Image (cartoon, rainbow, N blue to C red; front, side, top):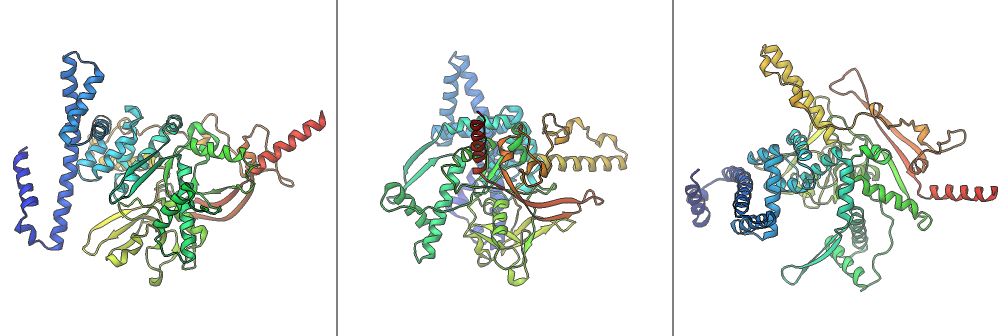
Length: 553
């Protein structure tokens, strides 16, 4: 590899300029930028391997000189910092994530080398899987590699979220322990910013962060509605400072809703739990949500306005996205807008991880676009102006007419795709891999080439929990059993968890069915029903039971 020659050409073109670049058309310039991006990702993959090799070589030489292993690691980090022109802490993080990618995640490293994800995304994944064992990292790598075609338009934050979701699903108990340990690292830092500004950073639990963001956003919207001409973000920053410093009366108490998506397994059988997803924030460990629900139930007497509403949602088995119905008005009604926020979590424009500010019609309403989940996208404030930038979006459907992703096209023909959040990454990866391998085996059998038939053992995906009917310790509950006592209704047994007894109302809001493409003779249930979880109910029943016991005595 003649690095000096390549470097010399790049230095000349970038530092001194090039007439050939100056004469390029817009389309040719875009092609040049795409090629440079591919070169930079390939260089990042080589750099990751070089850092791992540097670490190994320095450690070997230090240990040969009978230095302590800890000193050998510090020496390797210092050498990497000087080579990368980075701070030792930054170089150490890059070296650690590179080691995980090289040693345990070959799929992600190959994807980086081929330009299928950015260096920032690859190292974000490497940092997320840091607490995991090498075996678990390898399993996460298998699942993410299977999902590569569906993740290439994602931002850096979602790449990290996907890795965390997969790791949580494969190791629920480890996720709970990691959350407990992470809570101990709460902190606040203040750093200088440019032009006389500062940056305040608080490391808090996920739900506390979501509550703060939602409170500030509601206050900003209220101020704008009353004629305040400051920008939305300016009002949020001013209210944050005024409330903390006591410079004004602060924010008025407001009723707000924080959307959290968590599976029934996580609530009732935590040994087989899935990760939870917080609206506008992303993936969090299930134990964090369970702790918050317990805290809400314990404080029900002190906060009678508190309610936890459980809405029963269903995911599509093909891609793990949520399914729902549509509305007829131009504006997205509250229930549908909330559903889009939950389905998309962050802006759905390619490579963007900003918070959702508006729900956008993919096909404009004026052009006949429906107000529906299939035609709705949660976008940030900038990407809602895509038409002004010459960008258009189009829903991509599968053979059955179901939305799978959205394709974005710029004025000059650049394309990128981004779908909704996959809430079942491990399950969908298993199904996709099974179909792909089955198709390969069928094709090989038709061609009469037995060597092309991949053995089943080599295609094994990471183990996941069995279905409830095959899982020891699972209890199958009907809706009637979960529903609390009504007139003529069943009485929940005393052995039920308190969370079961707190489900006080069941409201079916419609049932949808569709035919899955792999099994046209069957129909999938895509129902939507609501549970209202009353946090005051458990304490009320507990008090009544205690009073009855005292009267009996």
